[in-house]
Image (tube, rainbow, N blue to C red; front, side):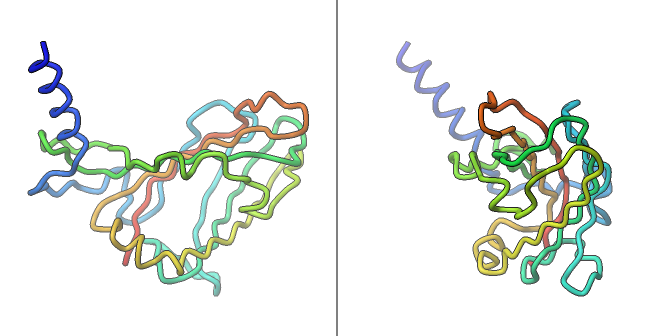
Length: 186
């Protein structure tokens, strides 16, 4: 019984680490040329378009980690006005596993560091009013570029964003979920 448990545990650990000689995966959903996004739930806030530019307004795709990013979201809020929100983020890479060479979205552990982010403070875009939303979010990741460059490579990444209502008295229900599939350059 102990051997079986040990074997299962070792296989689980081995499967979670990248392959020593990985097969090259093609870019899914044309992420080699453009960002691909979709709403992952029928929530009250639906994202209608996503564009990424640099400070001059020029396209910043694939995303250059050495330049500040301007994320422009056109969305619609069919619910209440939100004065506070929390964001949970999950990261994935499109790659193969250690025990197989099948290309698929595989989770990148964040150990909870991307959970419970104060969305209003991070994006500086509250309140989120009912109706059309034109959100311009400036992300300056340049100070993290050397670290992010270690992750970024010739593969696609997926960023799954879950936004929760954090208005006073709310039950923290999800109000938006969007998946962005994209490519970074070093």
